[in-house]
Amino acid sequence: MAPMHAMTILSCSASDGCGRPDATDSLTAPRGGGYRVATGGGTGLERSREQALSDVYRELRDRTAFGTKLVAVSHHEGHPAATRPSAEAPKTAGTDPLILASFDILEAVDREGRVTLDVFHGRTSCKVALAVSELDAGGRRCLVDGPEHGSSHEDPVTPREREKRFGL
View 1: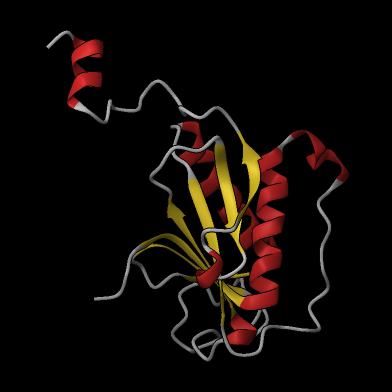
View 2 (view 1 turned 90 degrees about the horizontal axis):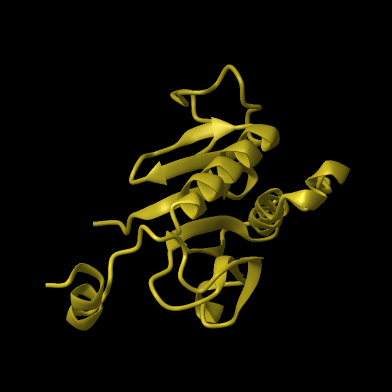
């Protein structure tokens, strides 16, 4: 059984899987030059750069809004697009760290070929982190910093914390 990730972004130029005739989003994504974006255990859709960037941003925004902490891990896949121009974040992105993080994640896809986005279970003040490779998952670079204890929706993790919070 394949591992399930919150999201997987794959560069089509690094994979033979993109640009297949049965791609479900073939009308809006360029053949062979886009991305395949999959959430959960799905096969994903072929997307243009702008669509993939939007998908990554929405995933980061929605999950971090509930206090979920995420780690993006890059995986070297085949030969990533060396000719794809590096897009810079728009000037208005300066106020939203999630937009900048989305650009950083897509840049990692361009360099390595694939990035998986997973929920991080542990104490950290980092909301979104980027690990350069699977082997370097311990050496993460924080893209979006926040409070150590996400939102107030988190459940207490120990019986003592539950007792304090709920009086049980």
